[in-house]
Image 1 (cartoon, rainbow, N blue to C red):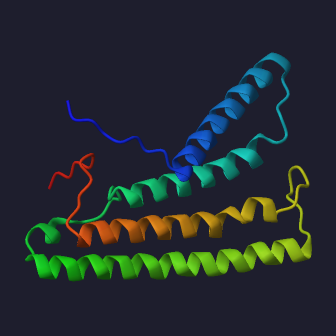
Image 2 (cartoon, one colour):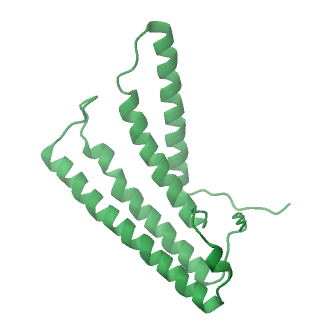
Length: 164
């Protein structure tokens, strides 16, 4: 049985904590709703926030381990030099999207902070929720870059099973 190095990455832990929080909040809300005919006011607001954190944290982990969904049939039939060009083009496309998300997410978070806007449910500052978008976009960019460097060097993740 081959040994695998554990995935102790901050974004993996963040995604795990977000998933646990979503499950706990939802379960608690269901129990309270069925026993008291009332529900917690914060559940939807926090659940949506944790879902975004879970999505971006999981995307960063997937980017690092080359496990994003994509069409890779063409990769298998290209010569090595063309495959490396394709890796760089894939990285450039991802970097463009992540750069735009980081820029506009940062601008949005700064505006939410400056305008002191509050969330509709609990009245908490909106920037607390929004600031995670640019931060986790940067994390995905870093992991995508690490993945591209590994792929250019010929390293592959033994955990990734690609069937095509």
